[in-house]
Amino acid sequence: QVRLMESGGGLVQPGGSLRLSCAASGFIFTDYIMRWYRRTSGKGREMVATISTDGQSAGYTDSTEGRFIITRDNVKNMVYLQMNSLQPEDTAIYYCNGFRFPDRDEWGQGTQVTVSA
Image (tube, rainbow, N blue to C red; front, side, top):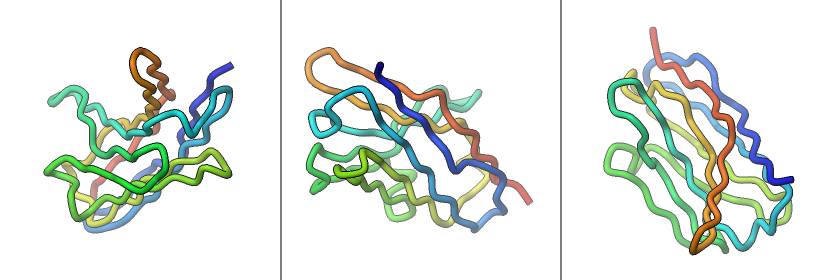
């Protein structure tokens, strides 16, 4: 059974940091590109970070470049998102996603991140 389980969300003040974790099971983790998405009521779904199967290449959206860092541990089947300098506009539900070309697309249930004073 494919499963992605996010954790680490919560309430943080502006300028603070959080580290999200995603535990993967039920599939060959190293076959999948891993991504973090977020969803807000105003902007819909947005991909914020992606990492290659071997963890050697990562990419970010303009709004997260320089503040967020995505990593993965292919031994533990984990993917992480270190989020720094958080701002209220980062408030969203964050989802872990695994993609294998051409048609495997797996999702977690999401974890809420709220940035507020």
